[in-house]
Length: 495
Image (cartoon, rainbow, N blue to C red; front, side, top):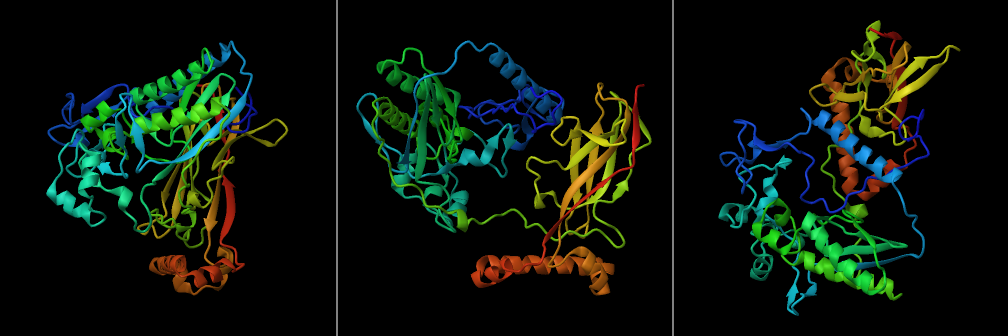
C-alpha cells in the first residue's frame, strides 16, 4: 500500500481492530496432546488430566511461520474488501457514551423477569487457561466445583459472601476480584459503553472480549432498534476491548459450561443480558437525539499503579568496551533468497526506549553516490532483533542479535547492519565513570552489580517515600544516553 516506503512511514494507515473474538483462535490445526499426538479431552482440554500437554498449533510449523501466514491472510482479505468497496458512508456523525455499574445492574429479560449482575469474580477454569495458552497448577476448563484448599488460599484476598456465591453460580469462585481492595480494586464496578455512528455504520464499543454468539446476540438487539427507527440496512460492528478491560462475555448457555471464557465472565451469568440492555438504551438515546444517563466513572488509579515488571537495571558493557560496538561481524558475502546475514552488538535494555516510529535496526545499502540508504528496518518481516543478557547472571552486559533473511528481490550490492539503542547510566554518564570511578566498580563484576542493585533499591524506596522521589526527580544529571553503531560492509549477490 505504500510502495517504496519503510514500514510505519507511509501515508496509508490501516487498523485491524478486535471484534467479538472471545472464543476464536488462529491456531487452525487445533489442539493436540504434545506427548502422544492424539486429540485432547474434548470437555476439559487436557491430556491425562494435564492442561499443559494440550496445545493448539498451526497453520504453520512454528509460531513465527503461523504469524506470517495469519497476517498475510488478513492483509489479503482486507485488500479484497477495500478494492471491492461499493458504498460511500455519508450522513449523520454522532455518538453516545455511558458508564454502567456492572457489579449491581438490574436486568429485565425478554420474558419480563428481573435478574441481577454480580460483583466481579473469576472462576476456577480461568486458572486453567486455554489451548492457546494453558494455565498452571491442577486447574482445567469446564470446572463447576470448588476445592477447599484453593478456597483457603484465595480467601486470604477475599472470601465471597453466600450472596456472591449464589449470584455467580454455576461458576465456582476462585478469585473474588470485585471485593479485593489491596493495593487497590482489582476489577472495576463502573465500566464504559459507547456507540459511534457514521451514516448507516454503527460501532459498538465494548470493554471486553465477547464470544462469537454473544456478539451475534448483541448486534441482533441493536439492529432491531435501528430498523425500528428507520435504518433499513445498518452496518453494525463490535469494537472489543475498548476503553477498559473486563475479561470475557459469554452467552447464558456458554456460562453454564464454565470453560475459560465463561469463568472469565466477571459479572455473572447475566453479564451479556446486561450489556445488551445498556446498548439498547444508548442506541435508543442516539436515534431519539436524547442524552444518555451515566453512573459515576471509576476512580483514576493512574498514579497508584504497582508494576510487577522488573525494573530496568543499569547497563554495563564490560571493561574496555563501548556500547554499540560489534561483538560478531557478518560474513563477507551472502546469497540473496538463500542466506541470512547476522551481526551481534554490545547493547542495552531495549525497554529504555521502545523507538516508537523508529527502529532498533537498519539494513543499509551503499548507493552509487557513496551514501548509505536504509532499505529495511525492524518493521520488515525479513529482519529479526533479539536481545540477550542484561541480568544478574551476565552482570548487566547484554547483546543485540540482529539477523536479516535476505529476500529474493533484494538489490545486489554492498550492505551493512546497524543497531540503535539507549543505555541507562547511573547519575552521570558512563565515560565520566570510566575515568573517575573506583577500580572495583569496573574490574570486579560483583562491584558493578552492587552499584546497579543499590540504584534500584533507592528507586524502590523513592517509589513509596514521596520526598525522596521529589528529590531524585529534580536532579539534573543525565540518566539515559543514545548510541548507534554499524557492522562492517558485506556483499549480497545472486547464487
